[in-house]
Amino acid sequence: MTDKEKASEETSGKQVKLSTEAFDHLVEQAIARIPLEIRRHLDNLIISVQPNSSRELLAEIGFPPDEVLFGIFSGVPLTERSPADPPLYPDTIYIFQEPLEAFCLSHEELIREIEITVVHEIAHFMGFDDDELDSLGYG
Image (tube, rainbow, N blue to C red; front, side):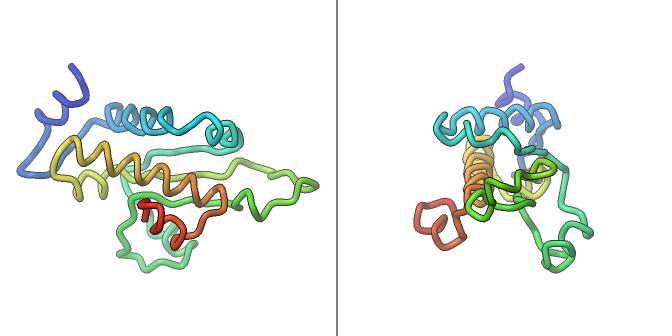
């Protein structure tokens, strides 16, 4: 069964609901579509799919506990690093499945929003700010 077939089978009302494995696969596909010139910088980066953001994570980054996030980059952007001080541990991008599914009304929209979210958070890792991402269509 394809991801699209799973999505249509598991759609309740207008909300798309995928299995964890199917959602992970869409995230992997989004990463694979990123140009190699960018992907080669992702060696020390973990991209983790989580059901939702936690209150602890939201507090850590200074967001209110009811903030809805599709994803978040946690770490030090490449533009703020010193070559003399390599990172002690990998930075992390969290992609949040439940808010993305709740926002999207179709499987195609979910694929598009996952890709936008993945690119948006990788861009933060690379040093782009939200204004730059808005101007590029990844806000």
